Image (cartoon, rainbow, N blue to C red):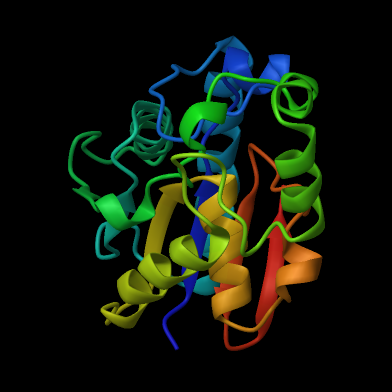
Length: 197
C-alpha cells in the first residue's frame, strides 16, 4: 500500500469561530500559516527518517484555497517549487450545503430534529444540500485506488476521516467526531496510522 503523508490545511478564521466551512473558500489566518510551515518542517524530518527524496514524491492538494495555500507553504519550507503540485477535486472538503458558515448552535436552532438525527448518524445523514460522509468516503477511495507511489497530500478534516475509515484505521462511529489536528502530518502506511506534530 502506498504511504500517504497527509496534512490538514492550517487554521482559518472560520475554524477559530467554530463555523463549518465545507466547500467555501476561506483563507488561512496567521496561525494557519504558521501551522502549515510547521507541518513542512515535520514532513522534512519524516522524509529524512524514511529515506525519501522530496523531489521524487508526488504532491496532491484539494482544490480549495486553504489547502492550496497550505501546500505552497509546505513546499516552500521543503525548498521545492511552490506551484509544482497536482490538484484533485476528489479531495475537497465534505459539502455542508446550507449549513456552511454556521456554528453548531446555529444549525441546531435552525432545524433541531435534523441536527439531532445527524449527530446520531453522522456518517450517513447529509446536511440540507450537502454530502454524507459515505459519499466523501467513496470519492476519497476512488482517489486512493489510483495511487501508485508514496504521496504527500494536503486536504481537510472530513477527507482525513473518510480515508481513515476507507483504509480500516477507524470505524464510522470512531471517526465521525475525531479531531484532525492542524500543523501535524498523519502517515497512513502498512504499519498503521501515525500522527507526527
